[in-house]
Length: 260
Ligand SMILES: [Zn+2]
Image (cartoon, rainbow, N blue to C red; front, side, top):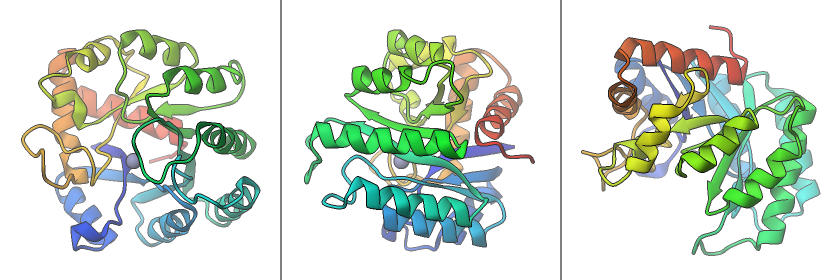
């Protein structure tokens, strides 16, 4: 079985309901989905989606450039309320640092505050943090390193840095999650990380509807394509596909505290 540890099931571009998108994945061998929120409203949606589909779990979280203009304290209260109301909320995020040409953009100082709030919330609730990191390696590592030897659990979603940065995350006990990016011909740096990551520290994801794997670029991504990510990991790690599937599933269930 496979887990898509990071997908966004609700997207108007699909022209399908979250249930239909998840069902399509299930037919292709994806047994479990973690639906990731990116805003306060999306966190409420995520809660509804995982309440209504037995094999979907969810997160609550605020993306670095979402809910601009809303106070961090208000966002915290909102997220906490959703976590307390639904035992199928299994993580906080995606949250982190995004230094890009995103418009509108939250200033770096405010991004840091928002990220710190969500890391604290995750620790308080005993949930893992789903880290979004675009061009923010140093800042993210600095914040996460404050929690070394604490109860903090985390995953670097859609890992896209090199082995030097990967080692720093792994030293802090942070899982690495691989997406369709590992199939892109130019990303030998990522395949090096795949080949070296310990068997008990990696997850698989699609980040659907974003980041389709090679062969589907320019199209929407779907959770069923997590199979393509698993095949690539199998090839790079020179391990049987079924071994990669069961290792990544066990890792996701351990991180998100899900008993199958
Ligand atoms: Zn995402």
